[in-house]
Structure formats: C-alpha cells, structure tokens
Length: 112
Length: 110
Figure 1 (cartoon, each protein chain N blue to C red):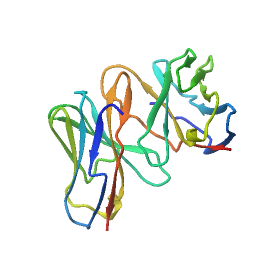
Figure 2: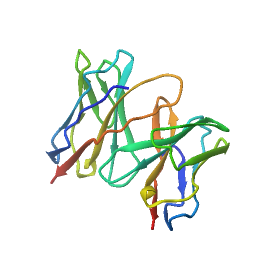
Figure 3: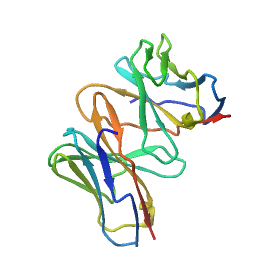
Figure 4: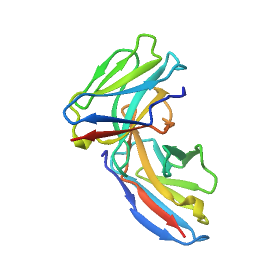
C-alpha cells in the first residue's frame, strides 16, 4: 500500500471548517483513500473513504485531486469534540484482509 | 461500535507471566484483527484472522500468538510477557470495506 504524509499537528477555531491535507503521491489506480480518527485513547473511528470522486457523508467531506496524489478531509463546522488524531490511509479494496498501515497522523486541536 | 468488546479493559502483570486478551464480536464478521499502539505511534498490526482456525501474522507478531475457535472470539496470547509488550491493544473487525475497532485493552507489564 502507498505511503501517506500528513502534517503532525493543526489548530482550528470552533465553528470553522477544518481542512486536513494528506499527500499520497505513489498511490496506485486501485487504491482507495481512507480517513480514520482517534479521540483521546479510544479505538480509531472510521470517517470516510473514496477512490477518485469527492465524497460526503454526515461526518465529513473528502476531496481528492484529479491526479489522486493528494486529498483533503473537511470537517465543515468543527466542534470541540472533533479534537483528535486523524489518520489518512491508502489501501486496495476488495476481497481479503484489510491490513491497515497507520502513520503518525495529524493531531487536530479545535480551540474555543 | 459494530458490537465489539474487549476484555479485560485494563491489566497489570509481571514479566514472564502468560496473558490472554479476548476480543468478542456479536455480528459474525469473517475478518478480525489485533493491533497494538504505543505512545507517539499509530496502530501496528499484530495478527489477523480470516475465519475459524485461520490466522496469519502481521507486522509485529513476534512474542504473540492468536487463536480463533469460534467466529465471535479472537484471542491474543502473550506466552511470556515482557516490558516491551506494555501497550494498548485494539481489536477490529472488517465490515462493508472498512474496519471497526473495539475500545482497547491497556496492558502494563512490570
């Protein structure tokens, strides 16, 4: 699976949009981009994933560049409860075990 | 939370003692995983299972063994615990192209 690069930390004001970047310049055509977050010491929580089209769900939006070498996770109206470590992961979907490779992630702090 | 529970949630043990952690799921998912997480690091895969009695190694499997005699239970065993195995252990299952994680077990080896 391709390697990802994320900034180690970011700050965002409560109520504003939080935009978290991720670089995955070696991504293959059949690899998806996944985002998870980990709040304090809880288990990671799935947020969203996509292949090449932009995706939106009740938690966030995922914007993937046309060349697929980078993506941005957008939390449209950040709240204090969004303070967490956010992980960007790329992997191939389909049959078989999902052996996720977690990097260091981005520690997002939402400030009041 | 995909019906995943882990037990115990906290454990303190001494070097050289055997330890077994349990992961239980209620929804009969085929794939189950054990990860460990250490300070300042992301999660690292220890072992995974793709069915009853079917398991394979992950990235950091040395010192660990696993067993899956029933679909719903995936056990992680430290045959002889060492201080380097002090960590938080997370279990996960695969469902609908993603993974769902349990609440974690904090293990301290003195």
